Structure formats: structure tokens, C-alpha cells
Image 1 (cartoon, rainbow, N blue to C red):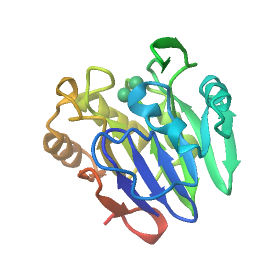
Image 2 (image 1 turned 180 degrees about the vertical axis):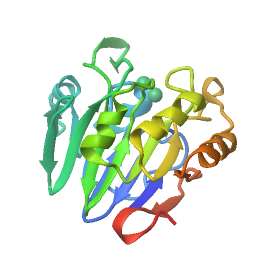
Image 3 (image 1 turned 90 degrees about the vertical axis):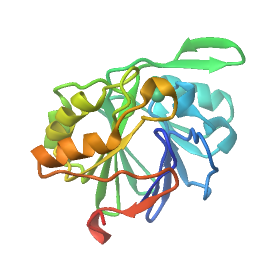
Image 4 (image 1 turned 120 degrees about the vertical axis):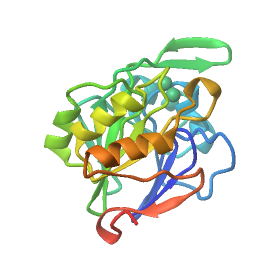
Length: 224
Ligand code: NI
Ligand code: MN
């Protein structure tokens, strides 16, 4: 599977299907039309261009209902559940965060925030969404054994590097890709320092991507 970071929390997974997670792209544009969009929660820096894309979209019930009302073919689910969409397995995980739908100056309840474990072509990717550290991340390891963990490290709105180090150990994925940092001043972090700290204290590898950069992960690639 080819994984591309498009900046902030937005990732493109390209395998037998093309999955776009949290389509807020701070700079640059979408390189390819996705088959499926997955949205962790309704904040604008995650919902992003979901409505404009008009693709099949996996989201928590409340967000899925909002999207369906906008004419989007939404696939509703909720935390702890799993669904298969076009052969791709989506498992919705908890996230310690909030969620709020903003629409034309109005705001309303967007359910709770979530994360995903997405399994495609034998490779399993955990996108934590926006979250604080929580000890049940160990259950995500025990249940789903993700090959790759995409973890927010920006602080302020999510966990920062110190908490994300513990998250990486709890989840146990051999490869961690940091996200949700550096997009704006409040979430500026030294990502190289995070990488050094994780790699010095664990056998986990941290891949720092630049927006637009891709790597092969899982069965076909060893994260090189
Ligand atoms: Ni958020
Ligand atoms: Mn966010």
C-alpha cells in the first residue's frame, strides 16, 4: 500500500482502493480522486472538502447524517464497530476529543470524535484522529495489531510529543508517522526531536513525511 501525507491530518492510502482520510489539505491539491473518504470528526480541519468531493464517505452516525442531507453517499458507523466498504475494512476507535459541525455560520453537535483502523490488502493503518493519550490504545494493539500508526503530536488541541511517545508504545505499530503539527503556530513542534526520542527508547521507527510525500507500507513495502 502506498501512503501519502497531504499535510495536517490528511492521508491518502492507495492500494486496491484509494482511501482519503480527513480531507483538509492546507496547501497543495488532491493528487487523485479517492474511491472512499473517511472522516474522523467534524472539525473543519478534518471534514475539509468532504462535501465538495461527493464520494462515498465513512463517518460517525451524526456526521454521516449531516453528509447524507448534503447529498453525500454516507456510510454511518460508530465507535467499536466495523464495516466493510468495497472490500476495505473500517474499524472505528475512540478518540478523546470533541466534534462540532460548522455550516454557514451555524454550529451543531457532530457526535463524538473518533479514529479509524483501516485494513486494505492485508495492511492495517491506525489513524488516531484528534485525540489525547488514553490507555485503551493498548486495546487497539491487542485487537487490530496495526502495521502503521498515524499520531497527532501538535499539542494544544491533541496530545503533544510526550504523550504521543507513550501512545506509540501502547499501540505497538512498528512504524509511526506524526501528523497534526506545524500547520499553524499553536501546534508547532520539533518533529525531529520526537523521532529521536521514540527511536532511542523503543524499536519503533518514526517516518517524518513532508506534505505530498509518499511511502510504501505493509506487505509490499517494509516502510522504506
Ligand atoms: Ni479536532
Ligand atoms: Mn484537528
